[in-house]
Image 1 (cartoon, rainbow, N blue to C red):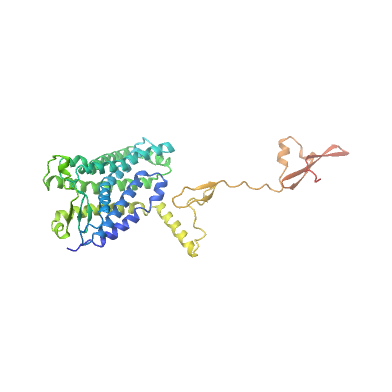
Image 2 (image 1 turned 135 degrees about the horizontal axis):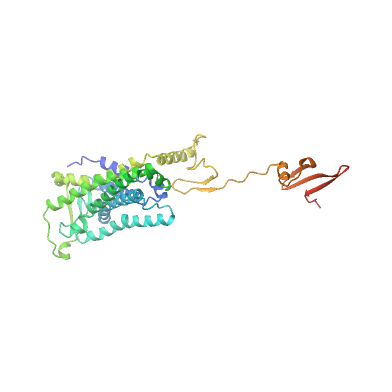
Length: 405
């Protein structure tokens, strides 16, 4: 049976892999660890789906056993990692809205990053080996889908594998509701609070909130629907022993498309599970790919490439991110790197200065002297003539340039 989504799914999954990584450099620079985890995990999931859709298009042959072992681990990790990254984002938004942390100092930022890594990396890396306990055999190959993990529908599989995305989604939903509640209570202080955080603007805050909310409203029902199907569609196999679950471990089941596409429930669940990852990538780019900072980076990248072909940017176009800042001169600034500044050099001394103000401060009468200043860098020669009496005068040389030998 022909795949109706080919090559559309392959194209969109590869485009999603590229688009979701475009904003990564400046989010990484801003220490937005939860957002970076969301981008990286989504990109890995899109790339994995793209490869599987190409290799196993119109076939279910075990071409690459090692890749299937890796691919199934990626599939399991991504199914938990994207909700976990969304949880990191919602948690950070709640901390900001409630005013419990500002994360301005480097130590606060480092602590926040470590917590996000524990959630966004620790939970997926913990769930992957736990799923192995209830994994019946190495993997299955579904035509047009590629390698998919196998989990025996046994009571132990629910706490070890099935419920993880739903539990994370519920916790994330609680943070989302608390964020909205805190925002409504502290609306007057919100803009002032964000102004103290140079890495997060009001627009970026609401884009992050919208992204986390959309991901929550989209992926959590899909996970809940899959959990419902596991509990009702197939019988629950009783847990007997480790040896019983892992019996005939090296068996590789292959499922042709004509078989699984004949059942509507399989088509809906499989297509939703893989399109949801691509949808996350496209939604993320829709929120952050057209922001002001993104358009600025696009222009910089465009002119960086255009200059290599002899096209020069207009004189009004800034060649650096911080062009026009007063009191500093950009020394080096490339996309994804931190700007480095050097102070402006002091202006050179004027060749002739007025001496009236300095002598006035020293209580001299300007009518009693004449002054002449000769500038020969780096020395100054100043001659003052004071009348000693009405009939005579004396000359005082305050600073004398040494005579050449």
